[in-house]
Length: 134
Length: 395
Image (cartoon, rainbow over all chains, first blue to last red; front, top):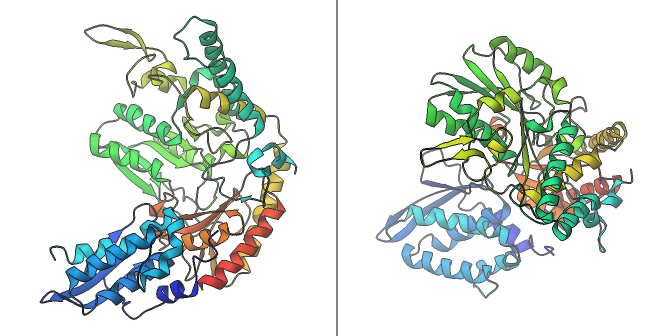
């Protein structure tokens, strides 16, 4: 059953526009999921290893939107390498049915839907590409 | 309609499954399952190679399947090539017919094609220097028949769009193709589940379709081509059973269709497809077409009444198959499909392997309901109940 998949906390993340932006083509990095056509564009900068001004543009499902919003929330203003690693651990845990801190705990119901895991992971591909080498 | 009773999966215990994803894979009736089971339990063996009784029976069943498929298409069995699917069939045509083309020759496809009728031609273009042109589509997702370049050697189009449900104006395409001396290939994957196809009446040169969309097992498909073309085309894959002789110096190919069926063919799938075609040929297609069209009308009318919905495809029922794709503003197709699944409604969301079409409509994807002869009003009722919840949750 997927009753709880689109629960309030997850939908709140999906609709969180704090770091959303109308990024013009050529801005930041863009990654695609060729199977479903979802696309995440992520922009931001590093200042002494600190992630700054993270903005995302997601053409994708609610899970992808929520993941991008969550990722921007936990990264912005933090040491990028550490924050990305911690977020990666959290999302892998929650998608495997394990515990995870907020905001990743909102993705717990996705664990049962393997076909949707890539929706959550796509923003991670974007951020790794954006900050590759960190 | 009472045809649903023939499909065991749709009658399994538990909540009703509103299976509206037949455009991806149709369900399989008892008569097909029985035919496959009979083969697997009474005569499973390889074809053409053995002389023992099982091999004889398998070979006979495989040959019968070819006859049954040929009858469904009103063509000769010698012109039926079993493939791995519709994609395999089009790739066969692209590789084999493609070797007869010269650099500078042109192939026309359209913006609405499934990737399986685009990518093989792009690959051919890369290999051989032919040029691939795209016929435009109109605002209703129909191919616009326009003047073809005199260098056009092949026009390859979907008989029915897997996204918009638009039925191709085959007569107009064939007339224009003949004017410039081009051959015509139809991708019939979304057409063959909706009744027998009179290929000679269509006047085309190639016809491809898949088994699993035509109530048969996965892993089998068909390429039909005129005998003169099959004779002229070189083999695609090499191996056993496709040769007349092999020496250390080379080989001589067998005659068609064996020439194009290297290795062990999809025997069980072909037997299932033959049984499906034979069963479909016995049905009252005037009644089924009217039934499918009425349900399609219910979908179109109901979707038009939902605020934020745009149907991508013909708005009316004329020249339309029961395939309805739509966009719901601010809701992603996968999220819609996920919520609809909770209501037992099976839909397809995404670009449906038709990215150029979606780019034309400036969409990443759509949500698609594709019907088949077993669909009923109760399925449409569930569809709209699920859509109401999806709209409430997502928008």
